[in-house]
Length: 220
Picture (cartoon, rainbow, N blue to C red):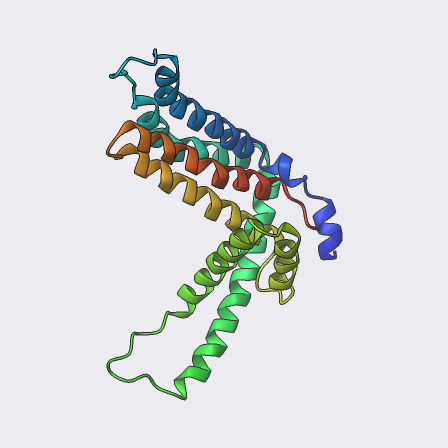
């Protein structure tokens, strides 16, 4: 079976990741509501009122629950598509093995030029294989922000050698985008003042929105 026909048997990515996409959109709304809890009381106060009571609890709450919300959604998607999960894992094993083979070959080449005693040890074959996928996802995420078409072309280029799969790269890009948003929300939890907490909640939104776009995109 060819890669193309194999892809046609799979659900669209927006269906495969439907629960995750729904959770991400819920998180976007929660970020906006948390910021509103800070800004709305100020907007409702009279112009002459100096001290306005606001609450940062919604900012803290969304920060504490965001990661679990996304993890639960991913697990629910896996339960909904068990056969797809099996195929994804088999594909991941193949691409990981291919990356290991490339890393092994690279290691043999580098053994001809031994590192000095003060040099940082090189990654293991397994570490290099894992790092390659993370690097690809991060690169695609960064480019997608400015030029989605160019980023899509990059995905195909990265997958051309067989060490990475298109959906595998996109899934890693989803995680990279969502992680930046989650890190912003973690900062909101310990922000020095309510306005900063609200701004950090809002700053997470573009990254979460990008994760939605990447989770919904089919390139094959």
